[in-house]
Length: 355
Image (cartoon, rainbow, N blue to C red; front, side):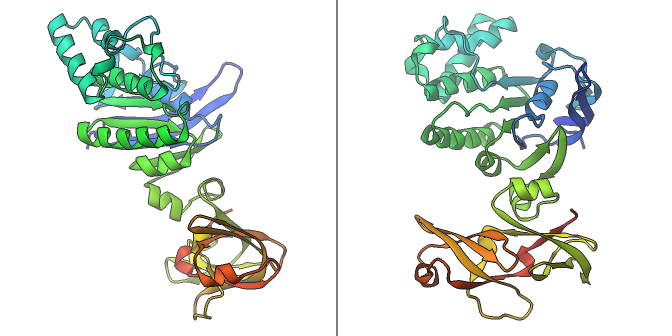
């Protein structure tokens, strides 16, 4: 199967010996939306620049549509890149900014104008076509950047934290537009972000990076429910992480570890020594259902935000864990700080991983 994009053991080491990216492998299918997610300095933007051709590759290969583009300059690659700061030309009008890439390609004027008119209409930018780009709002400038990136009809659109400068409400609006646009056009998107909500809400798969290394590549739901490494468990969502020692398995999928707060059953391999439990997987004051994990503790904090109750429960070993539960539940509203509570967890919601 030919992929739109394939990274084969790609790495980047700077002249001073600093390793920015190490042994990055990835295959991206046509029309797929892939997000690179991780903290600042993890190597996600460096990887995107290597894909675009703006950053030299120290080792490995970049393939696009079955063709090796490792040493091709950016203008020779079937990509278009959108930057966080939009990189618009302030002295140009909206129309001139959008047409810039087509002018560089030497496209005939009539065809260029036809393509620009169509993309301006798609992004509702026609009323502003003759205004200078720096006179428009952040949301409008974002649409200009997207229009300029898409008008050249790239096979792959690369986006480097393009929504980072927008306020929260506008960011959500552009997120929705971006996903609808990607589905409509069928273009492969590779999207860099440090915002979990963007990565989990927009992408088909998420690549989680830490210190230049790929920690996990998974669809959003799997990434959230089944973290594969301690870093992902700590970075994604709000998880309780309990350490212990392996004490056997219960079938091919379930394992068991002995922790300071008791035996924990969960989904994972033999030899796993960490239990990862999402905050929303806990139940308060459950019935003692056979096979369920039970953790006694004391309520140490309670905060109700809209429909969600954010609780903190201190376990017997003094570990404080986060619990998220419906705020309208009577057992939640009746709880007082310092009250004893028992938490229940279905072992199917617990992920066991290697430390």
